[in-house]
Length: 200
Image (cartoon, rainbow, N blue to C red; front, side):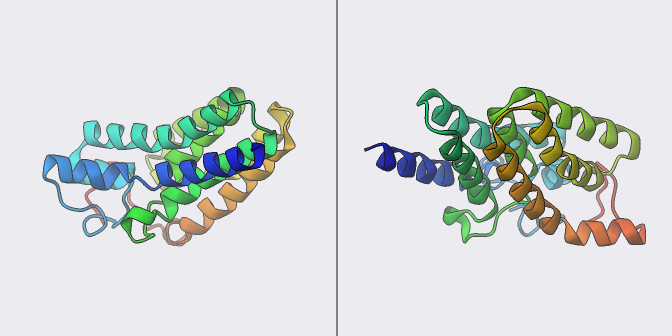
């Protein structure tokens, strides 16, 4: 029974993660599908370009919650740290490879932050502050996300006691960096657009 519960929670986390906040909200308000407009990414930054701050904030909140809620459920059920870590990874995987949307999802920044917040609040807040400071100084969302992804595993390792969470965060960070590989190239070339820019 415990093993079945672990599996059920992980599957539920993946399915919840597969619900695309950006695509559903775009449909609800009559906007263009974010996968075919702007940068083509169904995430908060692209929705900021396409629909403005309120829409982007709602997408960020939705994507964050689908990472946070499954982890909190796993914690409330008093599952093992390994299962809690796996639950977060499954929610993150659902966002990136959503079963409901042809396995083509977003980059995972907000969902990873939600997962991290569920794992431990102190490292999550630390990384969130770094993201915010970088975004305010440089006005480049991808640079802020990349910086946060680089420091997140170390913050999780140093500021909480479960190594399973730090390892899960490391895996998510590697995927985040891979998903931002085009942005990294643009940053090197000086071609990355700033927050709020209409540039694709």
